[in-house]
Length: 129
Image (tube, rainbow, N blue to C red; front, side):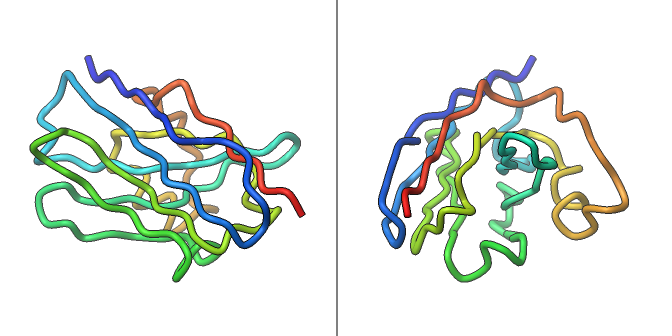
């Protein structure tokens, strides 16, 4: 069973940066899809970024394109989300996911609404205006 543990959330002023980390265990990390989705109170779940751990190919939601960067360290079985130029609308609980459905969810959010059973406990990101 996949186990995911996020860290790195917190509060930051608008325009600032945060780096989230997600340590994984229990699956073949270097041949998988890892990524992040977020959910704010009263809003729908939003796919943020995903990466194929073998190739490094990454996908981003339009709302974070050019501001967020997803990366991975296969030796450490860890995926990172570098978030720059943060905006108040980025405020949400961020969840790490080990699921290739995240790629489809990011590219076509109206097509699927996955439950993402293989997810971490979440880490809160709050961006102050």
